Image 1 (tube, rainbow, N blue to C red):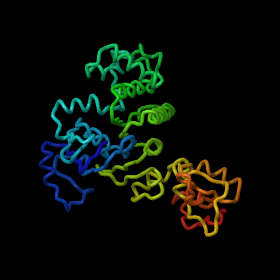
Image 2: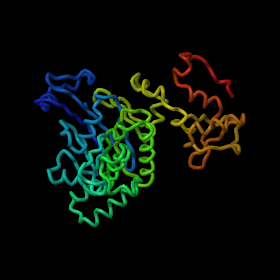
Image 3: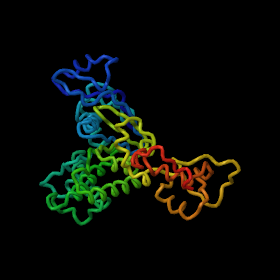
Length: 349
């Protein structure tokens, strides 16, 4: 659905000149050019159909600039961006408008609602821009309003809604044009923690029904773990590591990534399939089985009640076992035992 190859974004009076001055042997983390800011540095990635790809990093890492480059809200300095086989950087103005109106929708942190329009008209705005007649666009807008749980609020103005409700309006507006790709630029970061969790759950519910291809920007690793099929950790304009949540938690490649994952809720992230051991010699699968996708938080009570290991199934076939020791090792991060990294818990079972 979406593929980026060696994408750069440089801010300054002569970005092309700055880009040309960068030599291949220059260390990427030390790149600089007078009076210019290198915001995105040679980023490459692909997003599959129906996938939620999360880009996370601290403020100033370049993640918001990157997502704006995807539809040229920020003009990329170099690289290739392909959406459904079309090179975005080669699009003329008409093709680019069509991309933004029909194929890709964006949900912003500050909601971006029109204050003088009621909820119904805000949701229908993208359809209005596309030339859809009033009755058809209002019907579609009402469907989206119901989908995001705002039925009964369609005649209200944005100022009459809470922050979470306003963001639901923004989400409904993005979905109204039935885009192929959704871009989220820290959409929940301005919300209170409780409302934020509700919106995350709402997005997961919608994704389970609509299966949209999404790129989600956040600075919250817990949010990234909850929403992402894959996560890219970004630092100084580059991707430091890309992988499934379990990969990042179990095998961080750098100290920077390790700092993010050390407080991750491992019981909610890791699954039986990620920590299983090979079948012991002579072991025959017993009646106590779990699927590879089951999270560790569900394994703990099962293993606490019985000494025998659990057989792990993938696609209906046994692929290994998990026992108390393997779960305990997985639940304790590298520094999770007060720095006692050499303490063994192999005899826990």
